[in-house]
Image 1 (tube, rainbow, N blue to C red):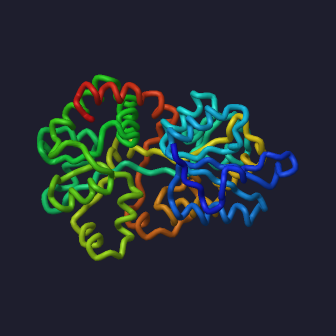
Image 2 (image 1 turned 90 degrees about the horizontal axis):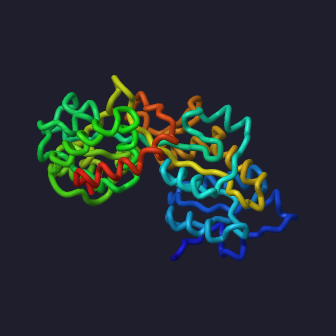
Image 3 (image 1 turned 60 degrees about the vertical axis):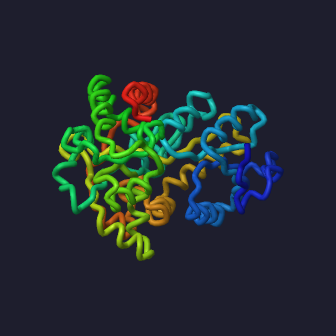
Length: 338
């Protein structure tokens, strides 16, 4: 198992746990791998004087590392993406409940639990080929399973958390039977076997390999902001639909974190989470990585997000996404969505 040390954390030995440094050190384990986050962390240190030592790794590897370290873990805070992974950390007993008036006031109730908090969101939208599909034919997730789209849908693996979370949301709203009917219809409409990531699906739609696909908004926005001629031309061929605007709203997933059970610098950890909910940090998430702020009143300056426009998000509590993911995986397995 290999971990990537950040520029800030030169070695694991730098993860200081002394009482004397309690309020000046924060040991962060992060599964966020976005370069724009460097400015986010540096800004926290400038504002507070608290030095961040950071270890990066894949989500499941970090969870296993924290669990194995047990009471001797130097980690104060875990940041990761996807509600299911945050819920898994909770189920493993890795987080400690946090009471913070700042977090409770700024983060909507459906985007937090008693021990972990969402700090940014990403919406799962439908992208379509403008030359072959009309937006009215794909206004809802349910439309992707209709026979009219047979042989026209691209997708990444059904076992990826992005698609499992969407399946979990459909189960929560419509029940197991409807979710399975949807998954079966979706699989029947595939233009090819699931492969690649979200960016690959967008490129496949632009190239005409398929006519419609699902993608998270920050992948779409990243391509929209690109100055590379081929990517500019690519996005001219692709349209975006906010699904289910007349019903449940567009499915969203989150990036978030919590303070760990054996955190040696618990107060610094809480202060860091409160910083992530500040206007300044929320703008970093939006302007730097094309994610949506969780704090509604925050003003952002991102031309791609502005161009995508306003939408009605699904307000299903994030804990429910984790609750139904096992069922979603079972349904996908039965229907061949792999």
